[in-house]
Image 1 (cartoon, each protein chain N blue to C red):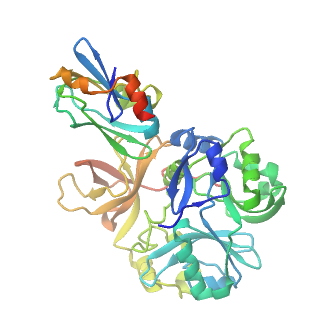
Image 2 (image 1 turned 180 degrees about the horizontal axis):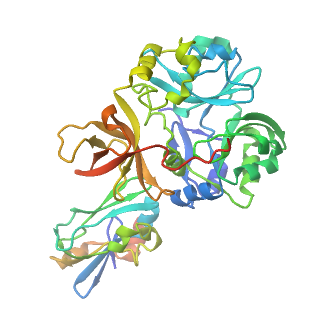
Image 3 (image 1 turned 180 degrees about the vertical axis):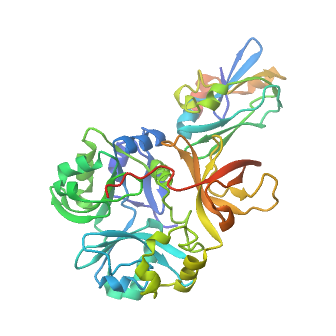
Length: 364
Length: 119
């Protein structure tokens, strides 16, 4: 086991009373003294600041179309100043990682998952060689919530004009910020790449604003789950296809009909046309007991064999009830279907529910 | 008041023992979102898993600290699990039990010993 890495905000996390845990090879705060529940609610009510510096930032100096060899996403058609959700797929149609792809004019900027960053960079280099430049001198912060835009505009005024999934490079007193209007909470908000040397000062400037609270990994997880967003390694991985994961929307029409030269195209395009054998669904357990990842799902209270598994599950502070995501056979995946999760030896009912559990509030 | 290494407190009054978790335990667990209590009338044996609590982080079992019969449970914390974080050593007790063997209480720590135990 290699040594855990620390972000540029490590000292600040300690100073703020963050409870530090190992996560994807990094030492990060799972919560602050406010606690997971209040941090979650604060983000939805005001603004939360997240340290997501563990995520991999990568510059690609190649024509946008070159990346299309690795992702089933329309990159060539991505306008300058715009960002799009993407997936690396393998030859069997499995998902190698999910990522954000931004077109910044003369290059692409990618944000990939921390745990997959080394593998992703090797994968990119194998296909794109020297075009791949990992960014190692920048931290990544997220400011999320209904007040995020007004607060960030005090430091970087042009953000007020950005729409959901716009990206911009904005010079500020905290260095040149690479900003996208996006996030992982279902809230309006921003992800901000800041020079590591400026990260502490930038974070302190935001935290000095009236209603900005630091938010840990615990609330980050419940926020993204309420928003119906996948966690790589839990809800999606190399054994799930984009169609099984209900991510067809991430595969634009041009990649289905014309430029179908992406890894796993045969499997994925067949599943888009004919359906996949199983599907990722939202599940609302009855009662208050959370159905957590790994919980087996059954078609009835006394069925012998499981038909699926929960991949994420937690209590949803905003929806005030437990919520889960998991995989079910296609014929049992329709909203309204009741299945049973086995929790501590008891079969408890849960209802298939459309995602997200809580509607997003993006500024489109 | 007596304390166990499992971070439970036991308060004996007139032959009935009230059981809950300590403030230290509640803080370590984080926000509690689910509580499942035993049934009144259950005969429990020391170390039986009698209560399940789930925090935002994980599920934990609470063990019966002594043998006895459950005579009352605190339904208020089932309806509102957050009470366990708010007042773990007061209003948010878990259950009351009539001990079968009151001397089992003697094995547990007093408050000063518990404070040393949690450092």
